[in-house]
Image 1 (cartoon, rainbow, N blue to C red):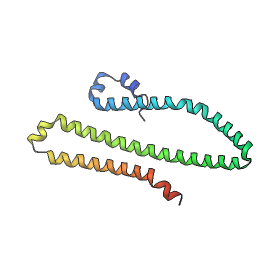
Image 2 (cartoon, rainbow, N blue to C red):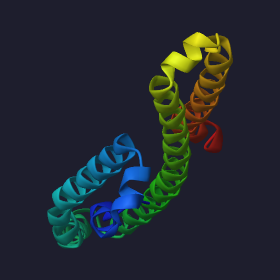
Image 3 (tube, rainbow, N blue to C red):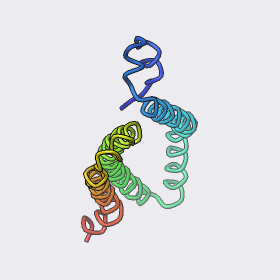
Image 4 (cartoon, helix red, strand yellow):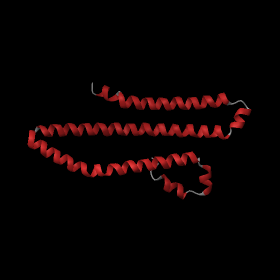
Length: 157
């Protein structure tokens, strides 16, 4: 989503940088750094996985014969299901990140204008706005948790 965001930040003009919230920039850059770090950890596994699978299949073929192919087919089906669930989880995580960003913008506005909020007694209005954003975030995260925990149970019954 925001891969290589640091390069985009470096190419922005000063006016655009001042208009962007510093919390957003820090959040996006740290997310990018975490994605790069996680991808570097998995490079070794991705390079060696096909070789390990082939060696395992040859050993299984030698030990149990054609039944090894049934196990390999089952493994392929499980990998496909895992990829499907990972895509759905990524979409839900993206929604959750969007609402977290909205909540951060609202909270930043409240904090920066706290004197005006207190002077005009607008606490309840802003509290309702933040509460609604939190409810929707919890709804999205609840659907994410349901999908991870309950969806496989219903699909395979």
